[in-house]
Length: 217
Ligand code: ZN
Image (cartoon, rainbow, N blue to C red; front, side, top):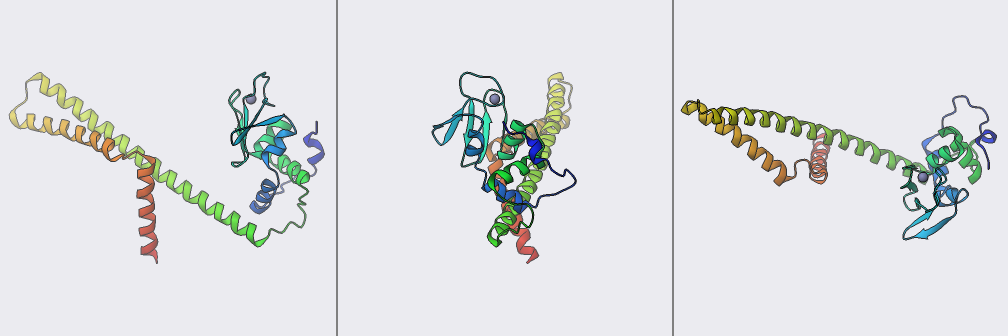
């Protein structure tokens, strides 16, 4: 088996450009890289074989070529072609890039990405950034909904205790019933309007970013 040491020349702080990483990824199909370590056979749109990361007799190691990803149902190992290389060669990310670029015959010195590759990498970066922003927005909304749900729930519980005590005056009773009503209608709204659903929030997020884009223009 090859080891990373032959690829670990000069460990100082080299950094790979995103275009270089993308080029290495494109020239390192995970099914080819993985099949050097385990025999893979077709299974639907995936490939399956014995996991190279744990002992097993029945294959539970899946490779998804279109997604460039692998997953093992036995030991939970998962990732892309770089994580596969890291795990199988027991090396770090940089060494996995060294290994895969050498394997694909892509030279790091004097690498100049084609215009098209540069555009593609920029598009992926934009998409990732958008996705991160959406996730922040989504988490924020869910936290706010949960907090409101908890607060209304606490008020409703108190109101119920007071109502059951039978000691409330008429106007206090009305306040207590209002608290119960507020809690129930909020819970119903969360349910009915799917306030926590990722797709609902995504639509809201898209509408908002479009609006902000228009305002900025
Ligand atoms: Zn495994």
